[in-house]
Length: 464
Ligand code: BG6
Image 1 (cartoon, rainbow, N blue to C red):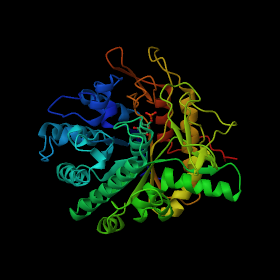
Image 2 (cartoon, rainbow, N blue to C red):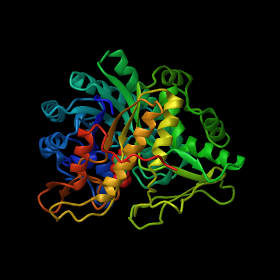
Image 3 (cartoon, rainbow, N blue to C red):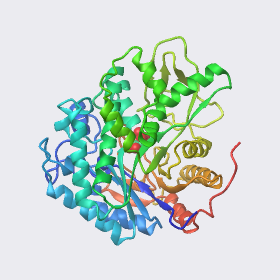
Image 4 (spheres, helix red, strand yellow):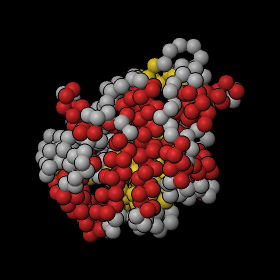
């Protein structure tokens, strides 16, 4: 790997900070939703708000040179009038200063799903005003932290929070409505373009990108029907984010298809031009698995998500579009995520060919139940998972792809949306029951050696 390659871990504000109402932070839509539903929440999470220094020091000691994290809008902007919360801003200065002290390059996300509840109450991403509010928030962040950050991203995973929040209904605000899904998707992609435009107009240093929950699409066979299903799946999973952010256009066949039965009058020509003119400098791809599909011509749409950790609960069947199927040859986690590193290699090659932008693998990891009361969690499965995915990146680089970083999800255990802290991803264990004690897992030490060898210690293998 190139000496400038970024190696690190990724987190999100809501999932690790805790301190949900400290230092004048206001409620986010996730605070509100989980409190109302009385579900396990991130009120304390990994208490990173108070332990960020220790966490960043451990990153450094683990050989890492970068940290991807998000800023919490409800910590930074107090109200709809757009007033700054200086205490929240001060917190992120301290985090950034710790990064710089330890030689860790910050890679910063503006929005990782924690919309201020005061905006959710006005309709959230269904309210067009929120796009301008996001632009204002982004400007406050660029102004406040522009001299300490050179890698920015607007949104984390529009596909994931929009589809889960407005179509599947398992995330806040909990709708199951295609028209609302379309409107939220449009507003988010427009807001992202406004964030890019503000960054360029302000002449801040560095680059700006977007992060996508990438599930490259494969088909069960080579028939024309399967290829059509694959295109529907790719539009649904990937293209409406990546084409829009990187090429400046929503996929026209997707828009035409949706327009048959839905209202698309919210798509305004002047705004589409802003999207066209403000594409991203780079793309962050979060990779957990691919989407394997076959045609689905009979039956109704069924979308269910596994939050229980009992295999077999996930379903993605979209009427007349596609059905996601399992490959019996591959293992899955208890939460139904197929382990398929080849998908990352194929997906990186495809994304690089299509978008010709530098790529970062901004999240990759495996969520499992673990006993963290032992001295050291021997997470061989995580080592094997990370090895095979870094191998996939190296294979893609060998074909000429420009890939500039790899971030483990996560540098330490944190809260998993709707799954609580039972589903662990960290390379450092956090004992949530026992004073939040941090203990590196075997994967932490393994990752350190991999980084020190610049990837030379990765077990290389071609995929079949
Ligand atoms: C990504 C998100 O979707 O995957 C993270 O960016 C998330 O916020 C991660 O935690 C793992 O997903 P989950 O649902 O298992 O926590």
